[in-house]
Amino acid sequence: MADTRKPKAAITHIGNHELSPATLMMSHGYDPVLSEGSLKAPIFLTSTFAFPSAADGKRFFEGITGKVPGGTDGLVYSRFNGPNQQILEGRLALWDGAEEALCFSSGMTAITVLMLALCNAGDVIVHSGPLYAASEGFVAKHMSRFGVTYRDFPAGATRAEIEAVIEDAKALAAKQGGKVAMIYLESPANPTNALVDVEAVRDARNAALGAECPIAIDNTFLGPLWARPIDQGADLVVYSLTKYVGGHSDLVAGSVSGAKKWLTPIRMLRNTMGGIADPNTAWMLLRSLETVELRMARAGENAAKVCAWLKDHPKVEGLGYLGMIDDPRQQDIYGRHCSGAGSTFSLLLKGGEAECFRFLDALRIAKLAVSLGGTETLASHPASMTHLSVPDERKAALGITDNLVRISIGIEAADDLIADFEQALAAV
Ligand SMILES: *Cc1c(COP(=O)(O)O)cnc(C)c1O
Image: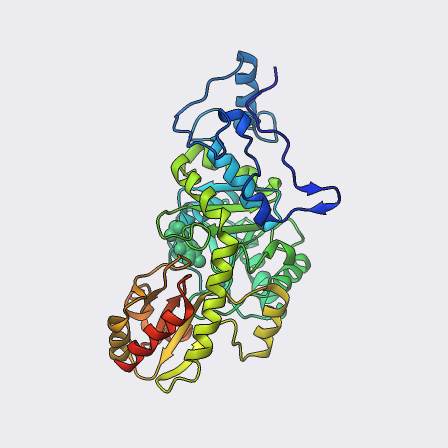
């Protein structure tokens, strides 16, 4: 007996015309007929789902447990799946051009379950550096406890440099009796804003390992609007949905999208460990996704205006903003990979910590907080906050200087933000 609770087949085209994700965010994967005509999806607060028949229950479990490959087509138990999460996952996959997506209770849950699912003892992870501190720490401090080691290359590396690191990792893996299990990227790197050449990583991977080693990338800073790394050869795209996708600084969540072949083991481990986003958070993300393109476009325009104003200010030493790249190689990657410069950048003031603190304490509209991608503008001082525990030499190597302020521009009126920065710089 068919499960009649499934939504109708999703529309993605009208004739030959392909609908854009911006349009599909209001409809994809949800049919009001299944919920008393409720235009918007209700929040399904339940721990478990009633099966239409015993045979259906058996079939659903065959999918959940992997006894029959391909996953389940039914709703079973809220640690495995739920309507809000399934609608969300379908809509997230559209933005990345991915076959499927999985949602998680945080970005770090997505990243840690991804790594645990795809690595075995003896394996090596090759990653770009620097990574988000918790991601880098998980690889170095926790994966190592299970016999998984790593090799890294700097975010701006060339194809030849990347290939040399992969070859080194391959030799290490052979010695450890494992394989290079994944290449894990983060682009742009925080707070340097160095972009990773995903096409060069793909070519180096294909030459050294073949396509059986997945390339995963943390696309939190530019996705889903300004970068679609699957188009450049990434296999898995990771998000902290806490940032631009959630976009209102009122939730914590994460996701991984990509081909079913890579997501199946990740889904199986999520089924076992938990870590799926809860129904309320998934519902909030559905609301957020309806405006993600509007919010990101506005924030991006604001950042361009603010940076154009900041650039020539006498108290400003420089800007780390993707809309103003000096390095020709980085500019080339930007041209091939990005459709926008984002709204998160580094502001270098003349002076050091004291000048930065005076600037931060004087801000009237921008809030002093870490995180990014929300509707409101945030500013912080990485050297004394997010990167406080990073050793001094590593800080220097990463360009995390005492005069660096990290800024995430929101969707306020650009003129108001400029007025705020003007008066705060006057206080420095
Ligand atoms: C915030 C962030 C994460 C972690 O996400 P949480 O939702 O806080 O767990 C991972 N990667 C990047 C680039 C981030 O900015």
